Image (cartoon, rainbow, N blue to C red):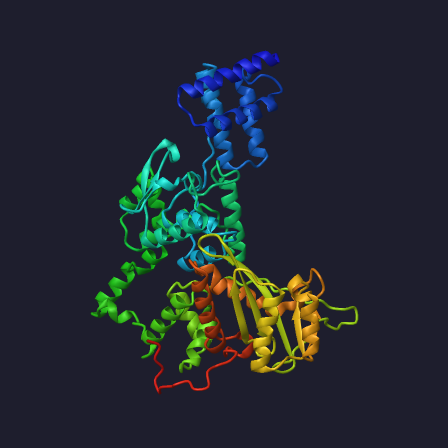
Length: 542
């Protein structure tokens, strides 16, 4: 057949699909599958014979094509021959493969929490998108096509426009999910699309969302063969385990048939475990015993509930602390608990464990010695650096962070709109009066630190400067680590409306960091604890 006839045949098939209202993706799949069959024939597909159709199916079987791919190609050929070519008799020579019914992969509530905590940045966009996928049970395409106006906070609903099969529906909106979406909106201020892509006039693509999910899964250490759609499976399974009716779940998921939703009854492990076996009933009836006598009632420790309440309170107060940091706070307050017991309660309550960050290597010389100047005593080595952030009105402010590398104490955090070399001298002067000058002051090569008046003045008081190599921030690792904790635990979680508010809250956090916050390198003790700590015989956190 000539190229003109092939083009005309394809056009006729497209017109037939448009008449029947097939979706754009379905049309592309049909065209692709018929093109694959034409490549096998080596000529126009409408001239195929039943024997050639049989050979094509045999070739796919020998090539090990999956049952789903095999059946999709057969569906496309049935449409092509039956509708476009008018050859209904060809359908008799097409066979479907039986597709094995595999149970969907489901993540536990703890795994979902770890995954959402590990979602990469920048910002909260991907974490909010994956949170909706799990919290409302939406498909990837439905999440990406959400608009800001689709979030109905008054009725606590999410409007899904043009979902699978072209059907609109309402999805649930939990209060926690709404609160997180509001945090995302305050930071990103999206207009039009709730999750804009690049450019912002287009929505986020499902491929980008899949990449974010895969990255978060690896960072959370989840080994299951989970995909983005697994969050939807987990949503349905967790609702079923919470005794939600199958009919309700069917409506929330937008399933056309109840049999599709009923699959989740086979993976609801809590429901399966709680079902009493008929063997147990018969044995108890024979022995004349109640079934409860065959089940051991777990008895926790006497202080289990009080400890759980304290852990939950600390986790809520310090949202970026893991269970080891919480263990340090508990022991500093008078508890005597092992981190393993705290971890068990932490995971049982579904609390979020912050993801571990990759450790950065130090700079080593060829002889095996480390370049870094190591602090040996208090007031031996100080280090300082700048951190930049913005207030709610978008205006920039900077902080000058000065720490003692040996004690890990934050000596000063100076906050102002602009900080120059004169401000650096003022801050150091105040500290030298209170503590005396250190032996070394470590910093990067910023213009505020290498200014001549700063170097001359530091030398005049008997201290020495220790500038790191350009492009080697790990040589100033103590201060960089402090800056990371400072941004993670305070700046990323607070929205300052005025500079004065930022100064007050940052100074309050510095005092907490020095006197209360456990430091892992100090045996989970604070860098500069208060001299007098009131202790009761019985620890009390409330």
